[in-house]
Length: 259
Length: 245
Image (cartoon, rainbow over all chains, first blue to last red; front, side, top):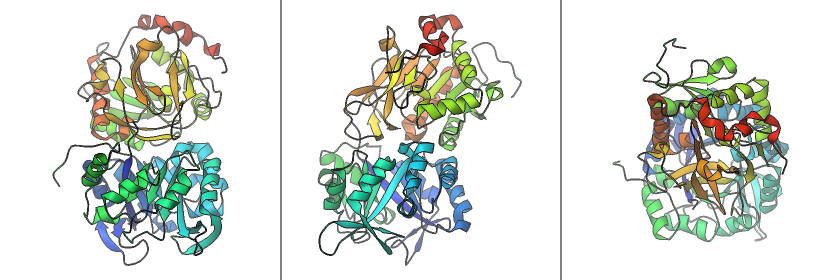
């Protein structure tokens, strides 16, 4: 039976893992490959790197980090942030990533999803969708540039379109919940998972093991992503997976390692 | 090339693995994983890249037709078939396993035809692509899985899988995995090994499996005489065998 995945997300800026909210109050958290190796040993099922500097001059640094990580952590690695072309994606895959996540660039040019899927296969294309609830309760709209810019796109419609274009997986972040530790938005997740057959990764709002269980059981998510609760060691990956297992969810359990 | 001549079936203590690069995905992980478990890795982009290798690995993700086109333009299709037909150790990973079959339903591509059967879309899968860790349930013993718990989890990322056909369908099948209807997740026949999952991305068990491959190569156990392949030689001998579904 396919296991539900637990995925730590590492925000990377200028070659270092940072914490804090995504764009302000950044605090240095360490060397990406080192953290990646630690998470892999603790039972992380995959890793996501989000390049939040994403400045053109930072690309070389990022590719170097991707390669150093791929050589230390033998679990799948998804890299997002600043991928704007098929050539960008090729470079990131060549450096050792298994998947690339497209966000702002895909909204600006949906054809990028199709072009990347045609070249590398849809299984390598993750479309990341940042969702913000409309004030009137009529669903969610897509926001880009880390939540700073609104679009007219409806989240569910964009999710369906992304999959039609070639997304092999969706990474759905609730901007309303991100960093609040108030739990994943299971209504948002359910609205999407009910409409697509590709796996959906839940993101934004995790506080504890019960939230991971709810994202899967109530939201229909295939995988759960979190950053700060792992970085700050509020919960270990092993503890989260144990709780998920006790709740009856199929997870990959690995032997406990000394911290 | 080292130039060292090892006795037949007994390569040097660090076997040389040639990994075919045809532009389909991440080679860093497989390079690192193989190096970790005791192989010397070289990347093969043309027929000369196979010279002196003890083990040939075709990795890859994505669709069959573009993969076959890139293998063809690199002049690698016949050398790969000849490598297998002459009983030398071969490992196909993910798409590299699918290419061993006669053709793919994904895009109608005609593939290598080393194993009878076709690559077909997963049946009744609750999600597609099938992405993540899943149990690999062995149906018979093989040294490929030595030291690995039964039903261990490995990492998958695919929507299609090879479906062996003909009289040897059961004997080539080494393991199955359930995602909807069970599919064949590992095959073995003489010198040919194939896994639908990604051992290079499957943490400790994946490294153990690759280590077993290296050990099989080192011991000579994966090197067979061409005669050992006569059972399916009709398939291997006739490139045009593929029948569109």
